[in-house]
Length: 359
Image 1: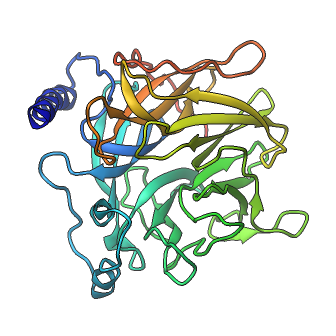
Image 2: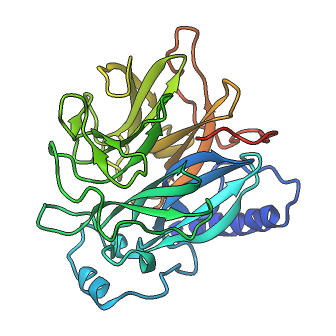
């Protein structure tokens, strides 16, 4: 019964994907792209929206990296927390002119272009700077400082890649303040300072990046790794700024369980202090389960906002079976965020009519 259901889902998305590739008038619904993807980051570069998710599991024909070096083959013998981690060795990306019709870009980053990384390639964050595109990513799911891995940096001349390792080693390769070095998010403040928010294992750190984004610089108090963990935080930190208010957002609960959700806090600066404001996204047994690890994208020059997140289909218990969805994100008059209502309908087309500002 379950296998038949998954086959029907697959057939539906093969047809939808074909319609999108053909540029037809079909309106995409949630989930917005076919396949098992998670941890989606949405950005605007030029006149297109870009989506950078984690490859969560095979959908039909397995997608694999072309090759591994001898060193990577040894790395891949490490006992992983879940078998799927050795499948996660690359990122596919998607771009769209309107949030509805998406074009797939295969292997925009692959461990073939980062010799120190071998598996558990997760949660990319891409930002434009200095005329290039910089991708921060998680690799190797390190469990202690004795292992090689953490948050890496890759660079490309185009948002569709190919992104290639910029450092030859992790940018952040150890635990600080108890935070596992995963789930990076690059945020540019109004003064052009770029911050990197990151952290798993229920600890959230923020660091300041150098102008070339290739190293860390100290805060005014001399610290480099500033812990800003809010109550309930687990992973997946994200930051936006609206009307002078900084919104720190994160995922709570277990990523394979029904309690996965998104909460937020507000503060006067990118580093806080932050006031917890509650949950804005949780599972809905009428729609999907395990909703979380989101990003938010703003239509440049407007006060229109969208939340992009992953969720698990009803009746499917495999943790890796996650799909990407999008909804409107609405702010109340007092600046608080209205709880998100998950839908199967998704959003209406929202074309970008002019070149976007830096995101």
